[in-house]
Length: 159
Image (cartoon, rainbow, N blue to C red; front, side):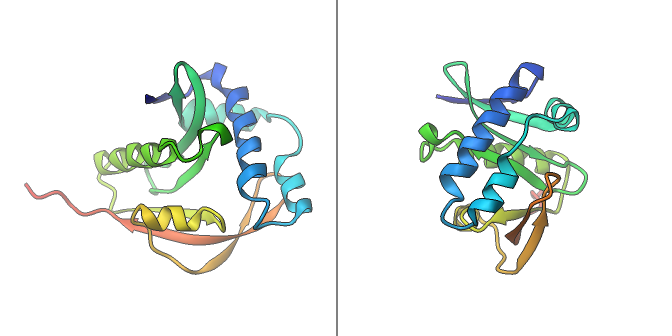
């Protein structure tokens, strides 16, 4: 069973490692090898450590971190949804996205927004996100990637 909890300092390396495995497994058909290499090279920066501890959530199965995600509760920006390849197709990303949507509703946001990798856009569409515009994502690691700008309006709950 997939459980979601707030990330902590001991999750930093597992998140970094599964992110790299996920990128290499899912994005290889949509991006150039040079882009993938730049995107996944190096180690964990101090800035990433701080970001993970402050803003990330993790998906766990039997105490093992199998996925991650985060939501900026001021802007509604969804980011860093990654699932470890052995857990692809088991609902970890969908459950994380539903968890983040509930957070967005609790913070009374009007919509959620994201920049989807080309391979992930169909998944987000299946979860109610809309968008076709191709944009360029500039990673902190210096790689530029085509992405799809998407949003999901959040309906106000009636009183």
